[in-house]
Structures are given as C-alpha cells and as structure tokens.
Figure 1: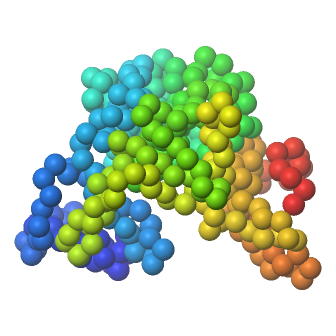
Figure 2: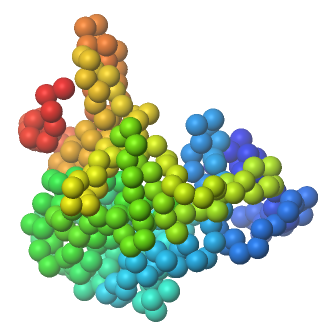
Length: 317
C-alpha cells in the first residue's frame, strides 16, 4: 500500500491498536466493534483507495467444506496478505492437511502427489518449466483462482500433467467461492449459491457473502438478497456459467464491444507468456484498437503463436 491507501484503510477500520512491521504498537481511537468478524479483506476502489469489507468465520468455513479435502501435503506459494493464499492455507489447516508455505513458486517445492494453490500466471510458469524439463514431482491437484484459466492452458495441463486434476474456481472478495470447474468441464455454481443475470451483469446470492463494508469505523451492512461486483456473464440452459469480465474493461473498436479480459485469457494460454494486459489505444478509423502488452518469460514468445491463438480463440474484432 501507498501511504495514502494505508491511511484510508486505517480511517475506515478505526482499529483500537496498530502493530507495525517493526513490532511497535500504537493505540488508536477505535470505533464500535462488531462481534463475530475475523477478517477485513480489501478490494481496489474506484476512487483509488481500498474498500474494506467485513467477513465472519462461518462464511469462509462454508467455502472450506465446499472445496472439500485435498490430497496432502498442500503447497501455498504466496504471501498470506493475499486472501487467495490465506484461504488456501486456512483451508488446508481446517482439513488437517500438511501445509507448506513459500513466498514464491519454485517447481522443486511441488508436493509429489499433493496439492498446490496457484494463480494462472504461476500455472503458466509451471507448465513452461515442465516443457523445458519433463518429469519431476507432480501434484495430484492444482487449485487455480484469481483469474480465468484459458482453454489453451487447460489443454497444456492435460498434456504436460496428465495425472493432475485442475480445480479452477471463480469467486470474489465479496462472495468467496461462486463456481468451480474440474479439468475441461463447465464452470458451475457451488452449493447454495444462486446466480441471476440482469442486463448481462451477474448477481450473486450466497451464504458466503461478506457482512458489508467499513466506513469511518462503522459497519455498513450489506442488504439482503443478491449483490454484484459488476462482472458480465452468461448462464447456459444446463446451469453452466460463462464469465465475460467487468463492463469497465470493455473496449469499443470499430463499433464492436470487445472484453479485454477475454483477449487476456486467450493469450495467457500461449507458451512463454508470463502475463498479459489488454487495453484500447486510439485509432484513426476504429476509434480504439485492441492492444495487448505481453510479459515474456524466457525471451520473447513466438509472435506467430500469439497471432494463431488470437485467430483461433477470438472473433475478428
């Protein structure tokens, strides 16, 4: 966090005590407490400062049981300041599994026959390493969250890690687990989560939802019923879910609306791609042209492979 972000979070949470990383504690003029809350996750706000949410233990325990026990030991290669890695670590402890934590992913740390929690960029790095050096330890389950896993990456998992189950989940800080997918199956809502789509926007009614948000030391409760984080989505006739990204990341190019996240998902599946950011850049006739900035791993990815993936996985726009 920047100083501005930290000050904003402390103003909204109004804590009784602040303990710095240097071990020094300061007493603050804390506001009213709400019993039962154990975690205040933050999300990026549209004003440029984090939004402080309020979660109780029960809401996460529901998710622990929905995800179920995994083969142990479980590797969590990321900082617990991220709720994705914190969830993975507490999930393992909840089910009595052996837990290994690391600050970053090292393929030599992979638990042979166990499980690992990853984000798609880490999964891509793992698959690149497996292509360069076949063999070595392989987890029985890869749990992947934080962003959509492109079909091309799922194909690489099946090819390079044939004995590994890919368990992908879609969720949010506000709703925790919303839907899961195993290997190449459809993305489906988890138990007791009810989804509706209104004007192409996904609304979620879930017992895992946060209690509300903190503003200036006071809890602003979330109202009853479904809420949304603004994700665009489609529901299939058989109950499957397709997430299309946030409306705010839509690029208007030549009269066609292009979801930036859909382009990112396709290009992330190309070997050698560390990560991708897609945005619109000005164009004389199209208004905006869809532009991908590719972070390379081990040199520049093959441009022909990038273009082939785009042609195969995306519309001409």
